[in-house]
Amino acid sequence: MKLRKPNVKFTRMRHVNHQIFLLMILTVTLPLLIMSGIIYMFSFKAVKTEYQTSSNLILNNLSFNIDQYLQSIEKGTLNAQLDAQLQNALENYTYHQEENSQDMKFQYRSVIETFISSIEMTIKNVDSIRIYAGDRAFYSADFNRADYTSGDFTKEPWYIQTLQHNGGVVLFGTHPPFNRTNVHEPVISIARVINKVGSKQQLGVMLVDIRLDSLREILKLSETSMRNFVIIDSDGGIVYSSANNQMDPSSVYKLDTGIIETVLKERTGSFYAPISGKKSYIHFLTSPYSDWKVIQSIEEKEMTKPAGLLGNLILGLALASLGTAVLFMILLYNRVTKPIIKLTRQVKLVGMGRFDVNLSSRRQDEFGVLYQGIHKMVEELQNYIERSSMAKAQQKIAQYGALKSQINPHFLANALETIQMKAVINGQRDISEMVGILGKLFRIHIQTGKETVTLREELDHIRLYVRVQQMRFGDKIRYVENLDPGSESAEVMHFSLQPLVENAIVHGLERKSGPGLLEIGATLSGQELVITVRDDGAGMSAEELEKLRERLKLPSDTLDQRHIGIKNVHDRIHFYFGEAYGLTVDSTDGEGTAVSIRLPGGK
Image 1 (cartoon, rainbow, N blue to C red):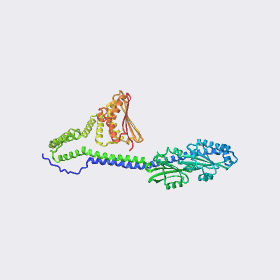
Image 2 (image 1 turned 30 degrees about the vertical axis):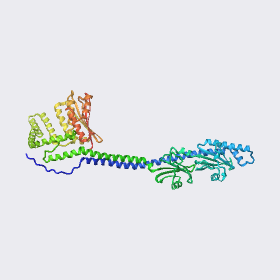
Image 3 (image 1 turned 180 degrees about the vertical axis):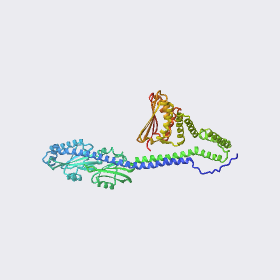
Image 4 (image 1 turned 90 degrees about the vertical axis):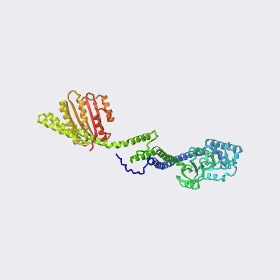
């Protein structure tokens, strides 16, 4: 037989590696890129919000601690108002110098210096304490007198400012120590007038110098290389500033004049401003006691660094997935796509009638097996094509013979009707009735082609079937129905009850000695219909029941013929209505069996 070469048109192929590469880009890389952008945006906002909240808490705690420390110093200075010996010594030394002898002056001076020494011991990080009375400055015994500069201190600005407060505390920000030489380390000072108890008579002025170590100890737990602090007084003067270099406390962190002016306008607030050319977040509040402003600043880049790290991590994952996709595409092309393209071209040549193609391969994997299989197929293809026409003709003949040998259900139903007529003519009414019922059963099988019918139609079939069994067993089988109103119109699987009824008779009632009951019940509950086929026959042992329940879960081809009908009904219901529906079996040895069908009850 001569073969005609088919007209095969070569078209441009869409290689599978390109499709997989595009799929990976769309399903992995692109979503990761979008996700990285979204996560970075939200984490950026969340980090800024979290930092601002923590910044407010830190500033409040710092301000409270600073105020507590300053108040403790103020309370220490109040002792000068309450110490009677000090008051007496200051009053006599200031206002009665001419009346006092040298011994008395020495005694008064000793009282004053002893008081100063006792106060120094109670104040942490104190640099020095001095009391100015009359024309003299008094200090403790440990004070280095060589550091003090003699002169008219009454004309010093700090002294005049202190007198103007009439006994109130005056705070002086970071400054070189007053009236001292050879001392360059800055201090903070608290000064107040010592008044005579019960009057406004000024007995002297107390000046307390405090080292900056006190503020450093308060701020050191919050100061980092990223977070800096500046404390200014109500006039904008620097009280304290973080060190630019944490290893060098003498280096000072400075703020622009514009930032300080902005801070002085409000008692508390936050804003963004450039510091040394870098955008920074600035947060400040005003101390209620000292009226100093505690300012905290951090570069925005440092504040949002965690969000940036997270965004970079996700971006890196996206780029890594892109590189993986490219590498996978290359490997896929060399190991899969290229052999498939070669095989496709050769198969197309075979389709055009060329059987001399080279289909050899050294690969030991699935592609090697595929090449060998196709090679063998091509060798046999020519013989197969020549035999195909004859095989098709023989197949038609075999099918025709098979059709002739089949029993026609229509012929069988018509034959049963003929037998019924003969039985009536001969007066065999029992045989006539039984044959008539069987004919109706065959007619039901022939006429219906539906998957589902109403419960009413299914019960019509069951009644005919039970009637045949009752004619067979006589009074041994009693049949009852217990149906909820409206249940007969619900849809059920066609021929789903007959296998269950047959099972109840054959394995239950037939094995029971004496008469038995076969009951079919239908219950509508919400959106579910439950049909129960119950018998009071032989029942099953607990072991047999458990085996049957397990077998219902197995594939159909694993079951024996005894349970194939029940399994078939169970699988049909699963397939048609879903996994939520199907059969459940309950049985007690010697008492009977109940098989329940759960179906959707809504229309």
